[in-house]
Amino acid sequence: MPIIPGEVCIGSATFFSFVAVLLLIFTHVGQLNTSTIPRGISMVKMNVSGFGDALSQSHAGDSAAGLYTTNATAPLEEGDGLRQIYAWGFYSHCAYVAPEQGICSNKSQPNLFQPFDTMVADAPAKFHTVTQFIVPNSGFTDSSFLGSLSRGAYWLCFIGSILAALAMIL
Ligand SMILES: *[C@@H]1O[C@H](CO)[C@@H](O)[C@H](O)[C@H]1NC(C)=O
Ligand SMILES: *[C@@H]1O[C@H](CO)[C@@H](O)[C@H](O)[C@H]1NC(C)=O
Ligand SMILES: *[C@@H]1O[C@H](CO)[C@@H](O)[C@H](O)[C@H]1NC(C)=O
Image (cartoon, rainbow, N blue to C red; front, side):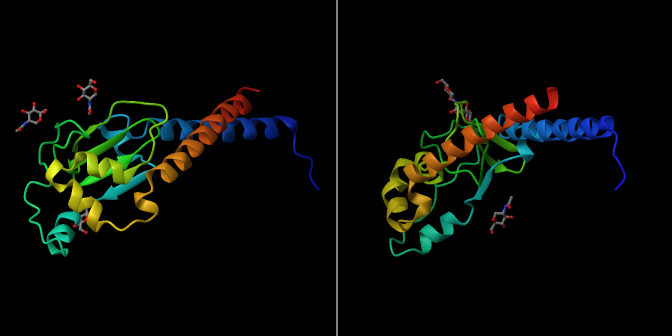
């Protein structure tokens, strides 16, 4: 077996830890704001553009008029209307009415993945009851379960990022 010089081992270990740190930094900046790089990176993307049709075809048979907003800068979670696409990062989630037009939530640490609560909070008040009625109880609507999973995942990635940085430096 050929003997690999120590410098090669240390050099390649440093290189790969550097790449790991870089990728983790990208993960941390995902969905912090709507500019190009953070916009493309997310933990979860959710397309709710079909929900209006589902709502108007449900037993409730309500019209979905006014369910969505087309105002990309309307504040989130204030009943101003659903957006088409939601994307979650570690520290905030962003909502887009069109591929490049959206707004991000205020930053918190960690930002919990609670898609159903987010949907209900954005939907105008008159849709709250019917939304809760037609979306079946499932993992998707169990916000405390999803929230605690995402909190755990966040802290594991946070510790992992620090350890990757230490590995690179050391
Ligand atoms: C969202 O879903 C709709 C309907 O399935 C589809 O037409 C649209 O292209 C999707 N949008 C994105 C950004 O994937
Ligand atoms: C969009 O929402 C923002 C924030 O509420 C508001 O200032 C703006 O006037 C709205 N734009 C339109 C076209 O309604
Ligand atoms: C962030 O918080 C400020 C003040 O609490 C509020 O005015 C603003 O609408 C919030 N932004 C979003 C996107 O909800």
